[in-house]
Image (cartoon, rainbow, N blue to C red; front, side):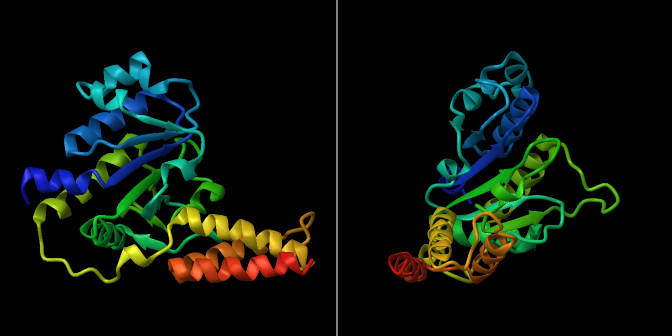
Length: 250
């Protein structure tokens, strides 16, 4: 793959940090991305205002200050994920609910499928101390774990970004013949799925099936079910039509 063709694919990848606490990690992440040839850094609800302009962030970026300056700041994860067809949430923790789990190689295959079809993708990393919360993981199409030491799987935030950026750069630069397993263009993006779930919640409340004061685990279970189904755009429209009828029958 040539430098120009790599850039075409790398520009489709968004690197998303959620509620980052330390400015130094933002700077180190910028350096890691620049080293591996990626650019699109997004910060979601950073714990410090203008964190990407902090002196420590700039120092640890070590020459990637222009990448920091172009960082996109969002107050909601859904803003950063708009139009992304594949969204991988990095986490080493097992979850009772949430999107399907994949190992890193499986995640790379999905990313390669999508960018080969000129579709936007995103890698999402949680806060340093807690990792991704279930509310944010719900916006991801898959949760991905890195093949780290099972006795100590915790990576520093910038280290995790570097590992992922290196792995993705390798498969993009190999230029290997790759036959996509599915057409990501037909799949609903995570934001559309989340909006459909909100519509269904309103519908289930309208018909009395869901008690908003005692919801138990119904909505997380539905979210996990729909995530496994890899819904297509026309299926989202169908499900929203059902939800609309539930509300009208109230």
